[in-house]
Image (cartoon, rainbow, N blue to C red; front, side, top):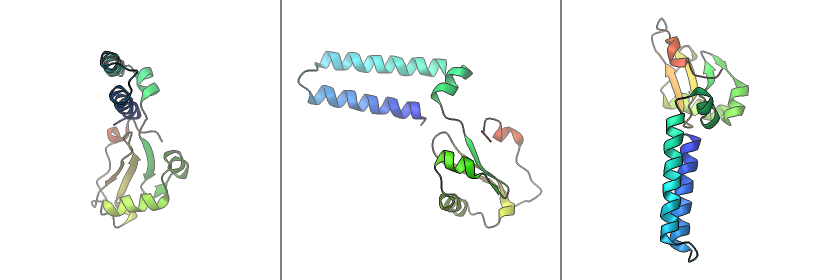
Length: 133
């Protein structure tokens, strides 16, 4: 879920709660508000195909680590501690730095660990095409 999707979810929840709990908002007004939010979400989904609009409403994946190198500036941007990073490496069963190809902070807030036990197998470049270094 992107930050835009999260905002839309909160807006729908708030609108439904206000319609149900407030005596000043009619059911028709609440339904009209839900239709407006739904239309806004559809418009965003349509325009998301265009790069400038996508950059305005979506996050970009962020490279936190590549091989043995930890990118401390990116950790700060993502608000991820080294402890969080180590926990994700353990979760991915990484036992040695040499196994790590890349660690990416995804647009959803998840951390992806790309690793390989075969040290001759290298990460395909296209997997990191849209990742901000």
